[in-house]
Length: 257
Image (cartoon, rainbow, N blue to C red; front, top):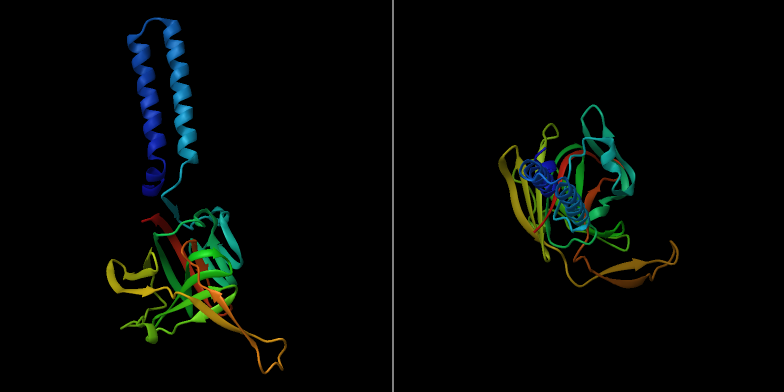
C-alpha cells in the first residue's frame, strides 16, 4: 500500500483537486452555462495531467513478487515462477537469468529485495544491458562472488580475493534483506538480518577488457585470444540461478539515485 500510494500520489491529488473544484463551482456559481463550461475545463485539465503522469519518467519501481502477474515485465529463460505456498517467486534452472524490462536504460540506482537461499545461492543481477552482458553478485552462505558476464562469457571473482567473505555464514532457514547501490563503477552491498546490519562492503566493477580463449574445436591447442570491452555503465536488475541453485525472492524495490 505504501508504494502504491507513492506511485499514484499525483493522480490522487489531481482527483481530489478536481472534485473540490467541482463542488465549489456548483455551490457558489448559479449559472448553469458557466457550471457546464467549468466542468468541461476540469475534465480536460485532469485528462492532460493524467496523460502527462503516465508518460513521464518513473523514478522507482516496486514489485512485491507476491502475484503471478508480476512476471509480465520480466525477460529471461528458465524457472522464475510464483510459489503459492511461500507467496513469493522462486528463481532456479536459469542460465541466462531474468531481468526487469522497465529499467533497461537506468544507470545509477539502488535496489533492495528480500531473499531466502534454498540451495547453494542467489544471484543478484545489476547493470544488465541484456541477458548476455551484466554484473551478477552471487550470494552464497559464506560470501559473495562477483561475476561479470560479457557476450555470454563469465569472469568470476572469488569472495576471499575481493574481501567479500562473511564473518558468519548465512542460514538456509532465514530470510535476509539485500540492498545494492550502483554509483558509477562502484556497487555498495548491504545485507540485513531482520533490521540488523549483517554485511556492508563495496566492490568496484572491473574496467577495460576481458580476454576469452576461443577454440576451433576440442583439439585446438592454440585457441584465439579475443578481448571484449567491459561496458556496463547502465542496465536493468534481475536474478539468476543455474541448475542446482535455488532461492526465493520478494519485495523488489528499484530507485534512481
